[in-house]
Length: 250
Length: 245
Image (cartoon, rainbow over all chains, first blue to last red; front, top):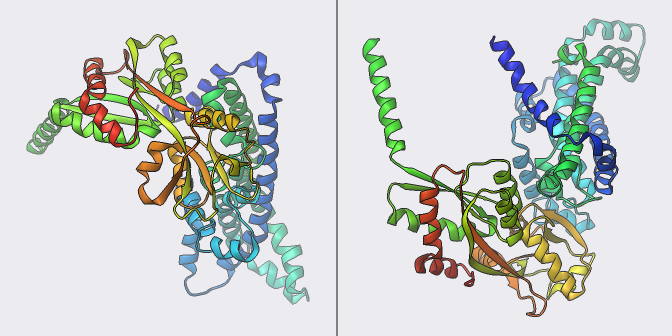
């Protein structure tokens, strides 16, 4: 009984969205230039964020899983912080650190002229900040579950560290790595608070799909609903594709 | 166990009774009215003990959408007539909307004006970080009108959901300039400087106020609107930089 009620929590908003969808006008609404710009930006920035998360996150996960160092639990806590921090707070923190008058942003701006807020790279930074923890935690968990005797066996057979990583460890954690990457990408795609606070909101430069929906809600309700539907569809496809793998690594 | 239950029930009853004594009046007001209406709320509650004014502050367009979707609001005070007209068309308004304040646009720059902004002409400079309110929001619509009047094509870097969000970014020095209201620059105190916009170019905002029918307390709403239009209410608005309607 309670389980059914729990299910209703998730289904009711979806029904609300579907009931407002202007089905007949859907193709016309989704081909406008606001939507096209937002879609392009969302895809480009979310993929960039996922790539950076992978490049930086996998080594970090390795560090947390395999290396004993003082303060490891603190580092793990810091990595998990963006998961529980309200995204707007994350965006504000990024602004104070990397903004034009920010702790790091100000010297960076004076030295190189590089300014992250109000730029597409700012969107990438904001979304990486909120999404990377997903990758680190998933991969760390997977590395923790790997039977290290396989790696030991490979070393005994003469494999170097890089070869072991490439041909033994990574293939063994591949399902979790993929699940982590997909979750990271989905989280980056849906980010709103940190983006609008840190990177700003400008069509074609920083207005990703969630921001476009937010703005459209007050001016063009039908477009907002149409874009929302697209995002729900994408999210559902991602989750269905993950299926069992979704649960195991977590 | 029995005594504990009774004590809890009595305590809950007392708490509930304490709240029920207060009439709540829900007021949806434009973001630019934040400080003035906070003062008006305090003054109103002193004169009308037992009435609790609850302020719902956001961009006028967001508030309009909430009302049209059925939000139970007693009083609506947007920053332009078009949002009020849409709510009137929705059929919720009791009586006629009345104008209660005017506001003018002003360029806001961070204290110190490091970028050396002198007027609307600088808004075309690609090198500067310029912010405006979103087009759907009154201050964004009026700001764009002013820019059109001045014949300037602005190199905009961000579009904020309401005037206070824009002001915050300017205060923080993250933007070089933006178009806000005179009252917002005043409210920000020393953290923001204002640069006037020429009379022929500047566009004014007129604020209507009306009582809505589907709120919990339209009676108190009528009293609230009367207060805003009264000498005391108008004096509070004037102290924040608003002009009379």
